[in-house]
Length: 114
Image: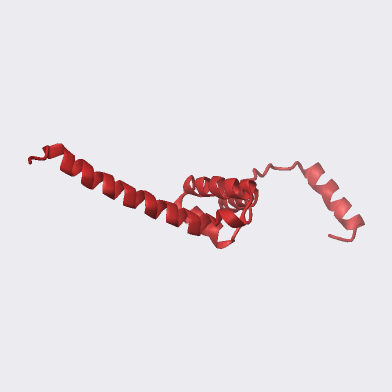
């Protein structure tokens, strides 16, 4: 009996796909533990994982190290991380007229600062 050349590879591929599916399902059950969580908790975990995937590797590690308990908390951590790393604000100094400077100095003296 001759086997069509494509049917052998299809059978092998089908077995590999079934093994892969079984492995994925097993990993999912270990990771998510659906019997212990509500539908909302499962959804939150999936959304949080997708959120992590959107971050740069450095930021992802930083956020995960802080063990956020929700996506909202993870987003706040990202905002804190980014705002702390933004460059310092640049302030422009303007020249003061002599009269403004002396008025400011008088105010300081009144308050005991100068």
